[in-house]
Image: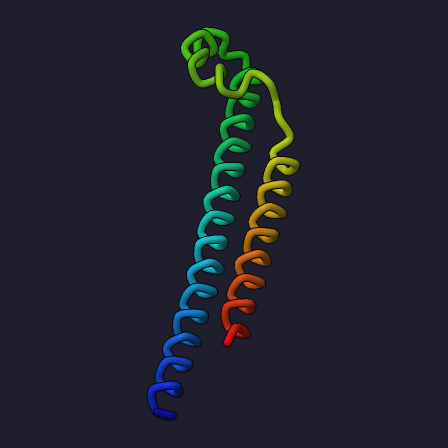
Length: 105
């Protein structure tokens, strides 16, 4: 009977470790994606700025579709910082829930 308890606590800790690893990997993947999107937007804005400064007025009319998404410059750092904070809070919540599951008899 003691062997079955040892096995169930071992599988419970394996599930706990797997869940925590999944949460961390998911948060890291989402963070990487958010950073790459912010970088892509910065590069698009920089490209438009260079085109405007170089005097290529004819190309600007063709770039109206691209400019539509970038017409209002939004500070990328604020939404990114907020999203990272939300992810950290979610990770903390998951960790607390897993710790509660582990301490329950």
